[in-house]
Length: 445
Ligand SMILES: Cc1cc2nc3c(=O)[nH]c(=O)nc-3n(C[C@H](O)[C@H](O)[C@H](O)COP(=O)(O)OP(=O)(O)OC[C@H]3O[C@@H](n4cnc5c(N)ncnc54)[C@H](O)[C@@H]3O)c2cc1C
Image: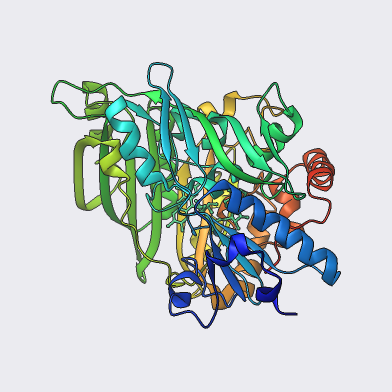
């Protein structure tokens, strides 16, 4: 079938094909080089809607499912935002960020924006939204799958702060969903992933007041590199430190093996308010957790902290990531992680403090299934070692309380059962079938 021949005129001007000199710059996301038959670089909502209708029409006449990917920031760890032989709808140019009501923190964001740019626009209004730790990640993917950000303990998940969405269904209809309109869709799209295409998110941002030093959205960042011998001992002390600190603190660790008896731990700690005696005391206590190689504490704007480097996508990070979350990071789990670091396939292990506000919302709040968890664990390896990483991590996974779908490269149906509770999965499937009967938004690699 010649996809191009069937393309409506409205979409021809935004089409990039393998013969186009631009093709190489639009075929990939950050994890993977795709070989799509067609990339559509949408700049407005009409083109997005027309693309959905076009894909739905092609599937119908061909009686097959043409691979279809939505690419926002291109940082999805599932790697489904590119494909081979199908169509990629790139929405990264549909990226306006509008502060609708500065006093109330009401912000409308088009789904192709990236979080670093969002923070720049919000900061002069003394507003922020807890997103991820990296400015290039997209609003589209993060705001439908979860969003474990640097302020998660104080402000919850990114999806917990979404108050409405403008969405295109699989049949090409546009609707608005919030707690009063299409409440079931509003519930499902926040955490449920691929049930529809969101073009705009409405957020309730929070206030971080400019301080006396005139730093807008001031926060305190501490980066520490430790060299340690015992992961078990370090994690016990670190957990204790987090547990005794305010929820204004979030701490993310990246652990790798240095040599036979030594581990390197990079800690990224954030206090989500201006500097105070309490933040200083908290960060001073972090300096006692292990032997320190490097340490830097600074007060800076949240917007500066997550500034986007705008790195072009070339499939540069050929990684594979598995994760799990747990309420209690027991000795048994930590020893399991230490064991994993012995394996050559495991490049690093990440542990993040979560909990706090995330634990306070009821389970029915949105389609995020795990409200009881306090620690997030991820294992990083090379994509070529995907099967080995799965085998190594799966025994540990059975002891964990659930998985964060937006941070997992595993798109098996078994993984779905770990991401969502049985009840949520059934509800999501029903919802998905009702608004996307042809399943055009359900991606396979
Ligand atoms: C370096 C790095 C750092 C990260 N840090 C964090 C972090 O701190 N916290 C965290 O929670 N996650 C983090 N992630 C994970 C990442 O944010 C998520 O995987 C997220 O889904 C990526 O969104 P994206 O729009 O950039 O991805 P894309 O690859 O563009 O999209 C991913 C998938 O989301 C869906 N999608 C995208 N846009 C839409 C839309 N508008 N409507 C419907 N579906 C859509 C599609 O199914 C698509 O395949 C990080 C990832 C990387 C690579």
